Image 1 (cartoon, protein in one colour):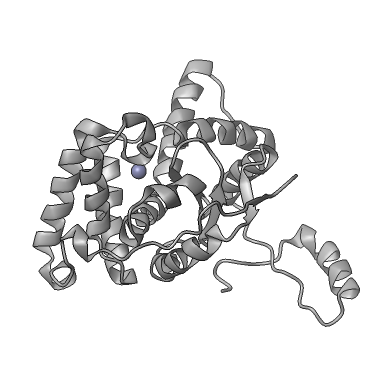
Image 2 (cartoon, rainbow, N blue to C red):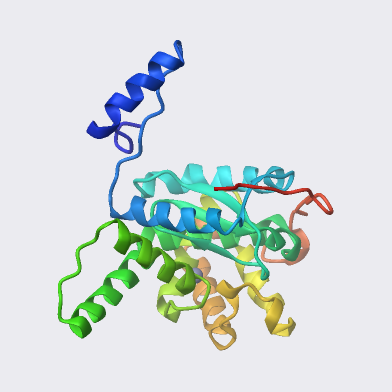
Length: 271
Ligand SMILES: [Zn+2]
């Protein structure tokens, strides 16, 4: 995919050495370096340094088929490769960063009741990336900071790192407006439908949470008063596009069970 990848000039000598050391193997291409990739990489580094990223686990076998199906549909709409990582955190959650990385907290796999609910969550997160919601919010924050500090901030590596720390904090709280969330729900439902996953999964997840313990609710869905509005927006979108959505069964009884190994082992990526 030449659109997405090209070797950086500075990387050429290194790649040559690698090519010489590994005769017969093509050197790995370097991703295009831009602001989104750099921010995404900085968040990845932070999570890796905290020992949160799961390098290998049987849990990936449950996640991968769903993530792959969603990637196939979503990838043409975003110019960096989508990659899904399992992470270990206290609350079930999922979050996406600029650059295409999507993080899924391990306990979310045990928390959801079926494959459609997990797919809905992932489609929602991927849609935030396609809409560049995190970038928009960061730019807005930068505008505010510039005004407050009265200086022009240049995006160097240290600032990228600073923003990454900020971003990790932000992504763990519900900082998007209801409109931004609804827009991600709607695009997410289109992606789920095109991936073959029943887009009612996200609605089922919302409905289930009306009675759930607030501490156990994934943060992307924890904005209780707004959930009713988000369900209404989704249902309206389904009604207005019957050619896409009418073939899907709205009853949770029609859901596909998600097979998740009990007490799965996890090996963590270490810096
Ligand atoms: Zn969201």
